[in-house]
Image 1 (cartoon, one colour):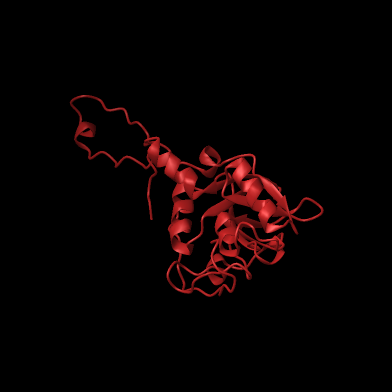
Image 2 (tube, rainbow, N blue to C red):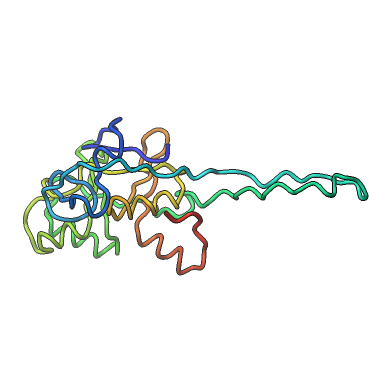
Length: 212
């Protein structure tokens, strides 16, 4: 799985491009709730826009040549692309959570305490049902006594441990979002990749292939 969609705690089969508009088309908002962390009335329509596939390939096969034969004159096959970085290599873990119904001010204090910009929202059964961003809180006011229930993002784009970092970067740009939670094959939350993770990657000098 490269990307999936979770809507109010349930994985759905709706195509990604039908729910999340690309950047600059219709601005997303937080009551219909996709995790861009902007204003509440988000419109989930978008133009057809496919991500290109990031191919994981191995190095080129080494061929043996006998000196003085025509084999030495044969054109060499182009070197194949090395596999790029995957989400598991840069994701932040553990993912910090907040209970659905928490007061905005309390959620903000938790973010400040943990020095994070996103919290996964969980229901009474501990199931992830959405994501709350610092932008969501700042739009309401950090001292707000409102519940986060109507303001966190309930529709979220999620990835797997094997989702290419280049694809996640493209997703941030294409859909104007700031975080992609990472789930395993059992739909268990195992990490999160934020824009800040990509910035740290760049600062550290690591190379991210195939930026879209």
